[in-house]
Length: 217
Image (cartoon, one colour):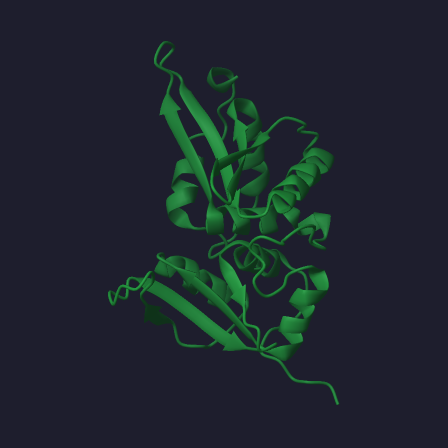
């Protein structure tokens, strides 16, 4: 008998975005059923819930031994969806073992936007001499193999062969894109997005650069 689930398993932009959030900020329980997403941003959790068309209540929790519940959390059980996540390459305790995922390339932009919203950043600073804004797109992960796969997919889809991976601190790697390549990526990430499929505080930064080329090259 087929097990019923709450999540409709069908690739769409919203579904791919939610997978990106799970790949970076999510957690698969060892019980083989439950999926969890925790974030400081309530908007992130509400977007995730909407993208998967869930009705579960959003809770609050603390981290690092503190009793202050400043994190928002959504946890739900769905064996079919859990098995699907295993099938595309996710796993419990995935942080250091994550590698290639089976993501349809037509939805890779949505997936990667979910990754950036989950554990990435869009940053800029003023060059001390030219005063031109310097753009940086970053994605963090405990798995270098995962970042290497992301970099490879971006190279195949967009032809961007630059970008580099740094070991910023013990156990944490960062994939970094600079200047014009970041601008190309932002256009790729935010083309034809729909409400609820982006974290607005990062989108507001991206909008400052969309359409700008010369001063970033």
